[in-house]
Picture 1 (cartoon, rainbow, N blue to C red):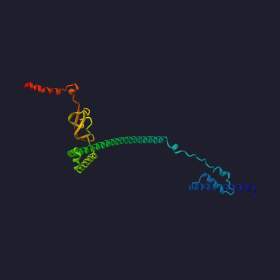
Picture 2 (picture 1 turned 90 degrees about the horizontal axis):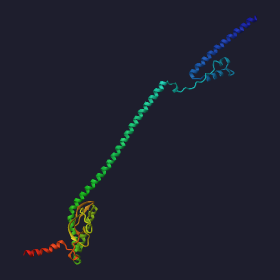
Picture 3 (picture 1 turned 30 degrees about the vertical axis):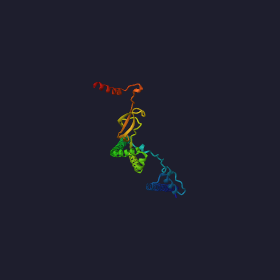
Picture 4 (picture 1 turned 90 degrees about the vertical axis):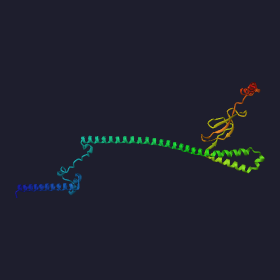
Length: 284
């Protein structure tokens, strides 16, 4: 056999083997890419699987260049990918929304302030109304009680006169009607207590200074016991309810005592009286 021919045959066999190996490797890579698409396998896992498919676990040098993993790409923020025009539009919309919210907030605050002012004004009006109603109620009650007392006072005056008359009697005579007199005293006290509970009080007079708001002077008298313009006697008792007078007290008021002739001063009225008989004598 020709040695050159054998060498050529061996070279052809090697070329066929290389061609078959390259074809099988290409088919294998395509198959792996298809699996990667189906299973979402990364390049790193692909390299591992290929290395495991070989007996010694190492990848041939001619495959390492093709299977070199691509460098990982850093994640780019979505804001960086957005166009500048979109960013500007989003910020403008946001500012517009903020302005609208501020306007609504201002309106709500104005409405709140108005409601607060209105509530305070209504509270003051209610307090004024309550006070006015209370005053009117008291005035109405006093008027009704005053009218009732006005009708009862004449009967009470007669009862007081009966008590005063019995008190002026001697002890012997009053002893004969003592039980009747005690009954009149109890009735008189009970009526005065009822009037007191209704707010009706007698007007103090004897020993007090004359006050035209509460007293009515019906007489004057010279009195060395009382100071001038002081009430010396009560002729008819007066009553009041609060500051309102139901009936004025009829009183006698002490005045300045008249100076007599024995004191060295001649009274004008007495001098004129003493001269009247002389005038009559001349006329005769």
